[in-house]
Length: 263
Ligand SMILES: NC(=O)c1ccc[n+]([C@@H]2O[C@H](COP(=O)([O-])OP(=O)(O)OC[C@H]3O[C@@H](n4cnc5c(N)ncnc54)[C@H](O)[C@@H]3O)[C@@H](O)[C@H]2O)c1
Image 1 (cartoon, rainbow, N blue to C red):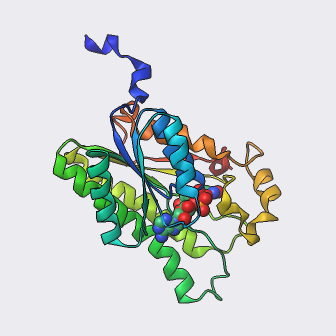
Image 2: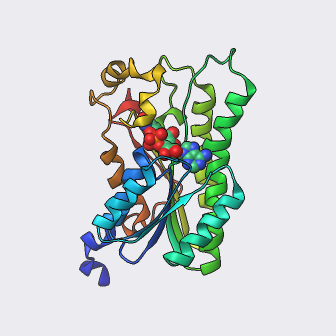
Image 3: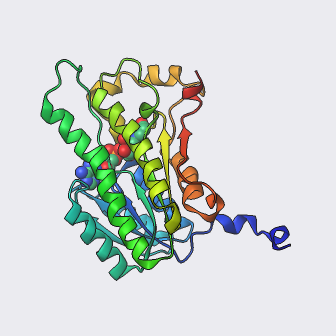
């Protein structure tokens, strides 16, 4: 029985695989991109940032001995994403893995929110996930070798954050969770797995926005583990879902929330 000779640590090895990570210039996307490289992947780094975020990520990937490319692009543009995938494949090889972490957050009471605030967030957080997955899956389908995609949702897609007026954000993340399951089912016969990760409160630049800074202590006390996540704690779950260790997982939403949704 070959199963008896399973090499368990090798299940997490991403050597020889090419990944594309959106939102790779900061926070969760940046750390996951570096983590994938440390597990052996070559990684294309997509972000719309104009600071040195992508360069920082690239430097860490070089230090891990892997290849990467920087792609300045916007996830609300289907043509940007098509070009990003073709540049990735031209420089690094056939796309096998993707993590879609690009996203924004802001807040405003529902009755005061203007349409453009709602629409801009929805375009990035939800349409951006669809456009990203569409471009990535088109390439994976064309190669016929399958692939694995992880979308970064949020526990806000499951619970409503106490004290945060963000109906558009919460709805966008509920959308990401269900869109991921829907795509998982559309592509299950093509060998493409699609899963999502729903982080709880995580210490990243996103949480330095003015309306949240004073709430950090409250977030910590509301969380069963009594602390926010360190951004590194999103790496293991992403590596797991992308790797052969999760070969029978598709359509899963993995909560990484310090127990938040239990209470
Ligand atoms: N930080 C948290 O507590 C938390 C919790 C749950 C979920 N999330 C989700 O995790 C993801 C990453 O968030 P983060 O905390 O690392 O934030 P972050 O602001 O540090 O990183 C987000 C990155 O996405 C990029 N981005 C935004 N819009 C883009 C666009 N249109 N095109 C290309 N890139 C774009 C930004 O430039 C930034 O580099 C988001 O989807 C967020 O909603 C974060």
